[in-house]
Image 1 (cartoon, rainbow, N blue to C red):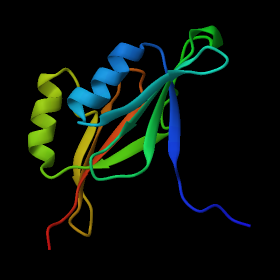
Image 2 (image 1 turned 135 degrees about the vertical axis):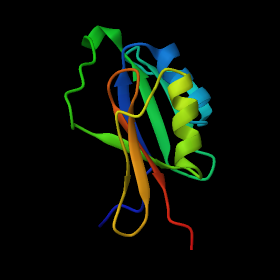
Image 3 (image 1 turned 180 degrees about the vertical axis):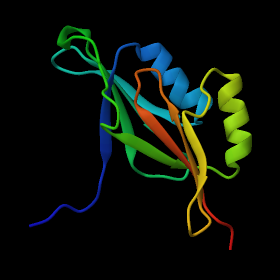
Length: 128
């Protein structure tokens, strides 16, 4: 028996409003649903416009503060124009923390840090 597909990934956050705003207003994800779990955590599911996998944002203060060490994990999103995205992100208080870098294949990428320190990779694929 094997898994069929990835359905969602969970990230726990300190400030639900700030995190949801980051993912919806800056990255353009859409809020799909919001609920309270049986243990009392608030769950918000988000998705990128052209993806089926969901991002689950979990706010559960009873488990203590979220502290994200460097290089623990990151989410990667494709963008059409890395430079334009970078200008908009910087204007909203999220400048590139690394990059832009061009890979040997011509793909360009850069990173920004989200509200809790999770790294977000932005990838502009080389046009054919």
